[in-house]
Image: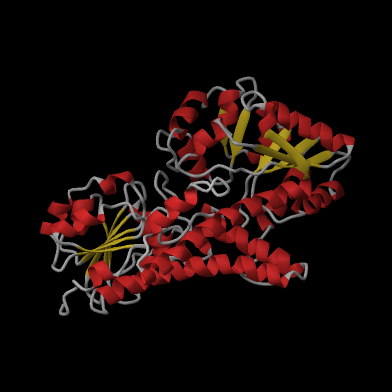
Length: 464
């Protein structure tokens, strides 16, 4: 919404939320999320044609176009539990729109939703319409956290789905005209509603599948002596594949990939497509396997126990250049190590101590709900300490796990870190961002995903 305000100064953009604390943060000098370039855009537009408010009904009443970006968490109970999207918040938003509207509206789905959600929303609005006409559009977001502003300023495509009748096509053109202020026309794609809704799920499923594919290859590389980075490089030169999403890692995270694949699995099962559902379910299984494989490697490498040992965790966000920790692989890795009674010292340059403690104390589904419905204060997890500096986090540690690919981790003084660690000193690079040879020259025992194991396993001392 901030980019629309930036590129369309004649349009007033009101961002509304029922959470007073969140809106207060958006109106402050410290935004509630970190995203490169976002603060500059907000400051440039805020107070002009961009405002943040808790007066939801007032701004819905005044709006011509309403973008709905509510949470669509995975259901935890009832029909489709563990797979289907919970549309409670979407339905609540639709009923509120119908209750307060006095003029015709275009309602735009920005949340990632199951196929045919628009049909359900349209039924709700129509039955409470009081003569008001609504057009439902699907306009999924294809940005990536960490590069979101650039993705919005220079998108590879904008997708708008709507009804194929004249009223639906008119609504599509109105939304298309907004994006046309800065997006070339050939990048603005229009489809029917169902194709647009499915395209977003498919997009995330294909990207996640690609990550799981290269991570599966990393396990083969370790077993056979191949080098996953060399395999990735060879694959990237195939013009049919390209270079993106071919970096082996500890696993994918973020708010969308797993949730959307589970949603896709449920849609397949609901339509009797069990073989297709099983296919997509395996993408998540491989991702879970990669995380558990990493934990097992840490434990077995450190003489089959990390009980009472200090393990430094560098990076907690699910990827660099964001403060987002939703479904971060670091959460499962940390919980796995804590399950073996490790003592964790965690450092991330953008994630707060409260967020880390909250993630390690919450169950796997609480994070997916609106912030005001999450636990207000986190319960500190025993054996976890949070540091504001990588050197302090690694001091007196037995091992280091790199779990986010922050650039600063590449340039740390690892000789200094080694000198202040217990010996033997281990490094487990879950993002393949470090120079393994230099670390070994310093004296570290190094595990790097997808590299041959024999090079370092034979050098591991046999006593603690």
